Image (tube, rainbow over all chains, first blue to last red; front, side, top):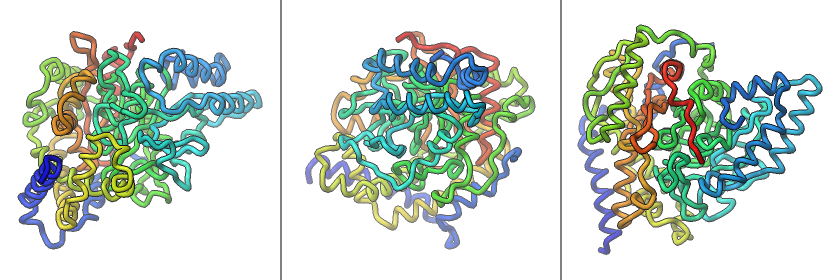
Length: 48
Length: 466
């Protein structure tokens, strides 16, 4: 494996490990669309 | 005139003291005289701008006004599709991005009377926080040439600081509006995810991209946001929420607003002058009646890692053809960052998207239960020297990129509005800045706080000597 391939592998492994660490207890019901719902659930101060 | 705010110029045009042609010509003259030192523009459309200005002048003479930007010269990051002008996205290819529709945000500004001066320089593919570009020239900081303008909306920030345009549009996937605004001493707003349509703008990451204004003052940012915000059927992610009257809300007192200053993570390893300026800005807000208090926030590294999995995956999917067929055209650091996305598994990408939902909910619930806004540094140090950030190996360069954008990336993952406001200068004259982060769709509060700060200080009235 050359240096750039090694670097990419290390970066990808690092990101995968970071996701794995915090994803262990994700609820089954958690889905990507929950992000927009989280934002839209907030109330602005005043709208016109 | 080129140092005026939009509102000052618009009033002068409406009163027929200055014509749209005079305003446009003044910008074009300044660009011609000084942009050789800054490299803010990739395309200057002098003929098109003057033709538009003449048409707007004729409308005024006939008693018609298009609105609050009638005759005001603006410019756009070179990832916004403007019919008749090429869109390189900072790549070597003059027409890298094409779109069947005009960028919605640009169209709304044009309909409000804006004159298009041209297209602005940017980091290649919007991937990088320093504003270096081997194809179109590195953008130089107008306050200190030889230093970074920040990126990736480098030309957008430098053009406003240099007095080339009265406002610009930029895009922000990991800090690309706020970082250059901070480096160049101008205001820059990343709105809430979904607040401003991205239709007609080249994507880098569908889940993380935001379009927003860079302006001389926070009040001008409010004015531009009011025009470009709102649902657009051409962008499925744009929100159907009503658009507040941001300008009218600016003058509401900030007394009683709860402002949190992170006591963990966001001041770690920050340049001492930068940290002191941000804390001093928080004290000014306290002096205006805001309830300023320390607050603990979740670890931003988790937010950054999750955001990186999403943005790298999506960027690789978007630019797969360029990366596979013409990789030699890409700058080495851009190619290296793009490459990572080809190796992230579908499993990790989807887990990251699911995690983002939970992290956003947790942050909103935990942090914004106690505060109305956060105040934190934007960049860890004032704009560094271009040669210093580009030196060394590709790995070192890429690592510097991550460190420089570590304070902005979490808020792309969270999708929350964040506003850069200049708050002083380092001892050698480089701008210092804070970011004000608000609740989702509560740009109004971040703008109110930023405007109140600018009414109490004079940093935004300073201009670079080019």
